[in-house]
Image 1: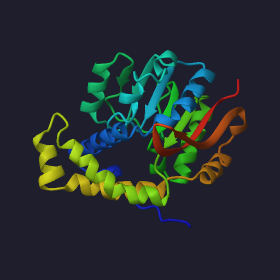
Image 2: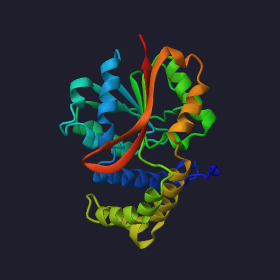
Image 3: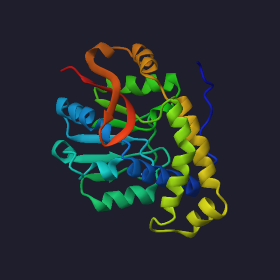
Amino acid sequence: MKWPRLFEIEDQRWLPQMLRNQMTDALRYLIMEMKAYDPIIPEFLWVMQQSKTRKVLDLCSGGTGPWEYLVGQGSHIEESVECITLTDLYPNKNALKAIAESHPIFNYEAEPVNALNIDEKLTGVRTLFSSFHHFDKAQATSILQDAVNKQMPICVFEFTARRAVNFLATPVSMLVLFARLLVAKPLTFSRLLFSYLIPIVPLIYLWDSTVSHLRSYSQEELRDILDNVHHSESYDWEIGESTSPRTTLKNTYLIGYPKN
C-alpha cells in the first residue's frame, strides 16, 4: 500500500530551536533506553574494515543519536574508528558539545550541514541513523549518488518501519520515555513546561514517530532507490535486516563502499 508522505514537525523551519532540541534530546534518551541500534554493529564494523578511512561523518545527528552508548560499551567501535564528526541541518549544539567534551573520539560541526549538499572537506564513512526516511526518493537517491561520486562509504540504519508492532508500541514508548525524562538530569524549566505542564513535546513525538514509521523505506524500496544511482556498480552494496539477542527490534540497513 502506498502511503502519502506526511510531514514531520521536527523538520519544519518554523519549529523553535528550543522545542526541536527537546525533541532530539528525547529521541536520544529513547534510543539509549531501547538499545535500538545494537543490531547494526556488525554491519557498521564491516564497512569500516572495508574502507580506507578511520573517520566517520554522521549526518542528521540530532541530539547525537546512538553514538553515546555505541562507543565504549564493548562494541569494538573504538578499534576501527578514530574520529566521529556529528552534523545536522539544525544542530543541537548543547548536546553535540557535551558529547564532544565527554570523549576525544567525537567532534562536531556547529554550523548547519545539509545532507544533500556536503562540503568536500567533510570526509569519512557517512552514517545516517533514523533519518533516511526524512528524505523523499529523489533526495534519498541524491544522498547515495553523492557518496558514490565522492567515493565515500555510506551506512543507512533505520529501526522505524511500517509494521503493526511499531505503531502499537509508539504510545507506550512515549509514556515510558517521558516518565524517564522526568528524572533525567538536568530537569530544566523549559522541559518541565513543554513536556509536562503543556505537553507540546510529547504530542510532537507522538505525531513524528507515527509519521516516521509510515515514511520508512522497505528493503524493496531501498533497492528501487539504489537502481537510480549512476555508477552504483562500482560499489559493493548490501540491503538487509539485522536483529540482536539483546533487543527484539529489527533494523533495516543499506550499506555500501567502493569495491577498490
